[in-house]
Image 1 (cartoon, rainbow, N blue to C red):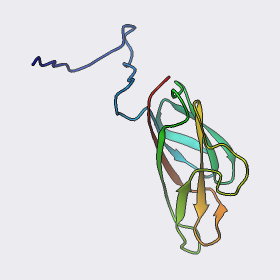
Image 2: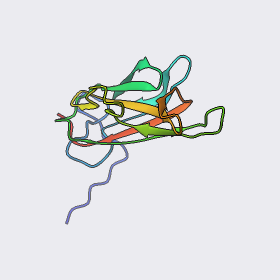
Image 3: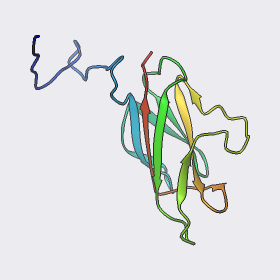
Image 4: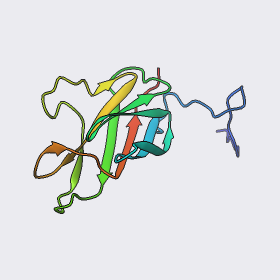
Length: 131
């Protein structure tokens, strides 16, 4: 068996190598979901604020289909101490398609009131195959 050792792997153009068919995350984001909603850090994704507690991660390089795995978490409590949960639509039967090849929509939902609300920290990771 051969061993490959390398300190850095780059694309032929000199940039980051694109992972396909491996099991590394294909997109992820840590973002501030309150006030001016913005990514703190990310990979292969941009962010759209759709309203209170409603966000879309748009993939720079699309997934091969909509059957990828999404993992997420929120951090923070409301003024009354209730925690937030991370959810994918259609939580409200609002007809929103949460996962398509080019994006995923996520909600931060206040436990107890069951309402979408902005939260200070949202973390999303996507696993699957790139197109």
